[in-house]
Image (cartoon, rainbow, N blue to C red; front, side):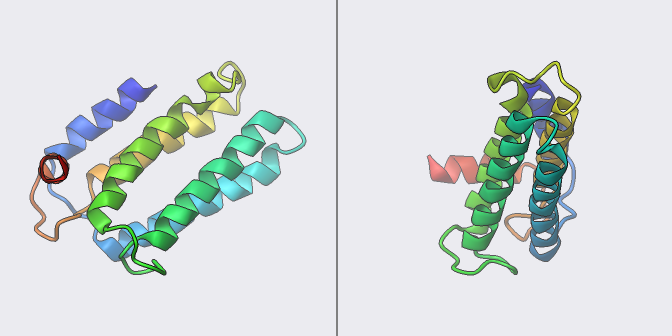
Length: 144
């Protein structure tokens, strides 16, 4: 599944960036809420999927709260770094069913779809404020 995340990253990297920081924050908190909601739904059916949802929801919430964007509390993480973290989380989320051995169960589809959706949203977000394509390549170059 991380191959699909890489495909989403590769494809969206070439597109104009249309999601601003405020919209990205709203999407992030919505994603976190969906993980918490699915944890409640999965709790009696599949504990591994439910706990995975709790971990993913917590990771997304903490990252959002620490980011320097509308909706963030402390500003400890720059918005550009938040983008790199989101790509990493997308890959982790998509591969959790394999790591925790519930890949052949129906609950795994939620994680695969969430991973692809997160990679797509991150790829379409304007992290530098320029709207230019290939922003994450430039961010990664500056970080190195």
